[in-house]
Image 1: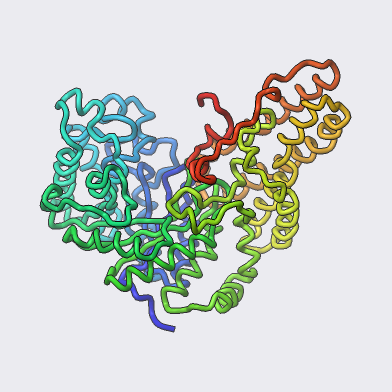
Image 2 (image 1 turned 30 degrees about the vertical axis):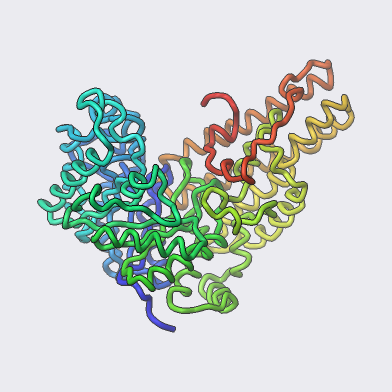
Length: 541
């Protein structure tokens, strides 16, 4: 089989959305990907790294000390893996703004730093100095993506209205100059210039780039084109080619879907990544990496994406037979490739993903079905009736690997989740039907059989998920998941008590008297952009 066709072929785990992998786990992860042929590990750290002189930066977030990073870099050097820092120097800094020390000084609006501000540039300079002190790679990814409201807050009250082009260009030049002073090679995500030239859109069939408007980019800058959604080969090709027109070296960031709840989507990840890797090869892109983002709670283990990571490494080297890939995976990991894919908690979708590949539709529904409120039933319209037996079968298959010496903890957690869902998924529908029919016998059966089963298995899921988290990650951030899952458990206990009160005393339950509206538009597209707050309630969170 041929060699990897990229100069750098890497993986970028998200270490900023609560699930901060501890250093021993990162070493294990680095060793695993290196054995597959990856030679680069990119650490996405928004505020989860030590910055001397900035005590609130990453406080209570499980941040890495400089010694932590030096230790990891030294280890990775022994296995032939380059470690590259991926930070943020404009947007995506929500966590630091929880502290008034930053909120009252360097916040523009939302999650965006205040551009053209002395304290902002002091903070960024401190970030870059910290990076310089503990990484050996000269490359530093400085972010600058998705700053949609740049200049619309405090900046505007100080400087008046300026176009985002003006603000972004000056800010980028300033950060690149700092990098030049520190002998660092800055890189940014490519979307902002595309959005500003295409009415806010990044993923367009024929990207329009006003090169005169964009102007001359800093000469030490490289650009990352990124996409995790597209299976339209022509569209992917055109996007990469458009980035190359900016006249700077282009990298590409693909994605393995680990950011929509408690389950990955390995199958779609492979399909999407295969296309982007092949188009990068055609266009001469030398550096390709695969992102593994987290949703805000960090619910999916990065190791759950091993099937896609392995498949992509083989496909990049020219392997076309999925049967051969499956054989090699089982030989390496000691688990059937197809059984490892059961961690996806595959869902019998009612729509064809190929018709809705514009983004957002790629998601298994295990998380919103888990949090779907037993009295409101916000997501009942998505339930097909096929889910309960599916989850029952998955739970049995997953349990077979619960004692695997290395990855059993992944299977124990997903098996408990599948068992919970096997009864939870239709709980709201059956509860509403019994209530509206005035069928107290049916409701009593729900209360005596379904609720105890769901609560028992939810408790097992909480326990096994906690174990998973503490194997993979630092403990900081677990509190978010425990607040979510503990809140769900408490809510189920409360709903059971109120339903029992209706059975015993006829006390009405107004939530069950409201109609269930179909939340969907264009299939299920917008649903998957919902966050946890929307999963649990139509109220404010």
